Amino acid sequence: KQEVTQIPAALSVPEGENLVLNCSFTDSAIYNLQWFRQDPGKGLTSLLLIQSSQREQTSGRLNASLDKSSGRSTLYIAASQPGDSATYLCASIMIKAAGNKLTFGGGTRVLVKP
Amino acid sequence: DGGITQSPKYLFRKEGQNVTLSCEQNLNHDAMYWYRQDPGQGLRLIYYSQIVNDFQKGDIAEGYSVSREKKESFPLTVTSAQKNPTVFYLCASSPQGPNTEAFFGQGTRLTVV
Image (cartoon, rainbow over the protein chains, first blue to last red):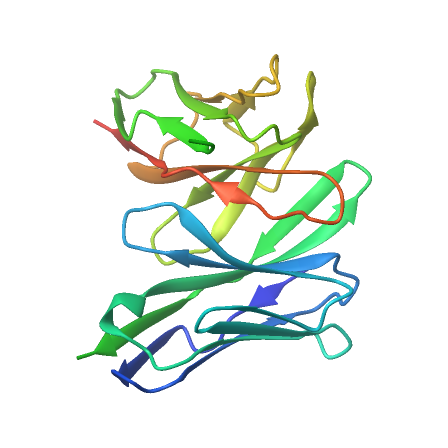
């Protein structure tokens, strides 16, 4: 059974510092990996999808890498801003006979202090 | 605008009462999912569907039922067997194929009164 872990569970940084968020998974036979952002009381917003054939994906200040062999993905957020404060979740995506299955990590709660 | 819509945003039910949560998408996605999120816990899969008239149990299906009569709609019924006082439910959809990017609705918070 796939298990996804995100450490640390919470992170606090001063504005302007770069953020590094970690995601590890036990079964390397993933199809894709996706990063999300969640604001309090809201749904999940998709940030980046890394397909299995890719090693990284970039969008603006966000960069996510994927190393399937070591079971790790990392989300980098450059020059953090107070508006980046949120919970960040990663999800591994595996293809099963019954369809795609997403398995989520517990999330990292980020606070960017002005 | 394309997207996925959950309604209502807040829902209250009495003990012993069944309620149905709505999830609609106009993204033309084949797959749809229901998750619950409890405080301090990650998302747990309740049910998912890859095609109309077919759905599969997730990790915590007991106390729930679903239907998939239309591609756009995947309603979730919470039965009276569910005892938790407040739960946040999230619906998602994704396409088939290599681009499996999932999109989520804004959630429904269900409270037992």
